[in-house]
Amino acid sequence: MNKKIIYISAGCAAGVLAVTAGIALSVSPKAAEVAAPEPSAQVTVQALQKKNMSLILTAFGDVAPGLTQTISSAFPAQITRLAVLQGQLVKKGSPLVELASDPTTRLAYQQAQSASTLAAAEFTRIEALMKLQLATQSQLDAANKARQDATAALEAQRTLGGGSAAVTLTAPADGIVLGLTAAQGDRIQPGAPVMQFGVTANLKILLGVDPADVSRIKKGMAVTLSPLADPKTKIQSTVSEIQNLIDPKTQLISVVVKAPADPRLVPAMRVRAEITTEQEQAFEVPRQAVLTDAHGAYLYQVKGHLAHRVNLRSVLDNRETLGVNGDIDPAAPLVVLGNYELQDGMPVRETR
Image (cartoon, rainbow, N blue to C red):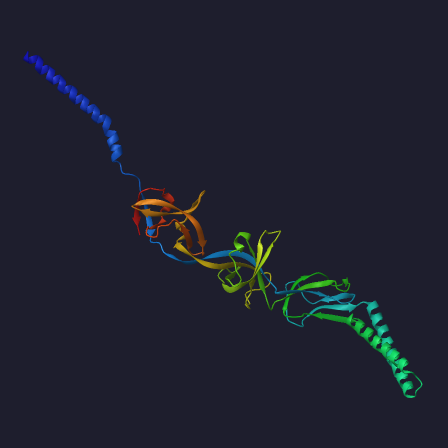
């Protein structure tokens, strides 16, 4: 009887051990899984600061003369010599083109000159007869009118170039030859353009701006100009005019900037312009702190060692930093490095 009890007790103990071992084996992996630490990201944070910031709009354009003139002949002529080349800078009074008067123009001038001489002599004769009471006042008046008409006709022919065999057209001001529309040897008619001339005393810059950004620009706003060939050069100016017309070719609106008297700016030069717009309150953040996805721009802040995504309503770009607005907690640190690895609610380890 005692032997049976001992055998039963031993069997029960072995069974309990087997069940306990099985439970331990089945529970251990889950327990190990629960005990594993959650993944976290190492990030660098900094405090937020709100300040007045300006949006910097970038545009590109060309330096243009403040005034463009067409150089032409007032009479039929032949171009005997072009004294300038396209793109050449000239001083006021410098010769641009030499013209030879048309033979018919010379003939008309000579005829007007003969008529003027004859009318003057006739007036002198009638005036002498008047003194001898051999001519009437009406005859004297008619002779005087004929003399005046002949003189006016002669002056008109002189203006038309008949007074000299050759005429030289000169630069009306300091400027640049923008383009030649005729060649040496060409015969030209009155008013036909010979060249386009630009006055360099008052240069301007024509910038192409996206229509969506034009509403931000106002007259008098500061502009920093840099030639594309020399980006380190900085020339300060202001907005002088905003044209409310879209260029059909570029689909941009022209913004005119005053060009200061600077020898580094020459007509037809391509420039880059940074327009400083009106200021507004925004949080200043490093450029790398702002990310974008299909939902727009966003950043991460840290609250309770967790990363929190904040979608942004507006972003101001002043080239060096960004100004942002949104549901931002000014007391929560901003993630400036390591944000590419983050997800909303992810644990983080902070460094400053």
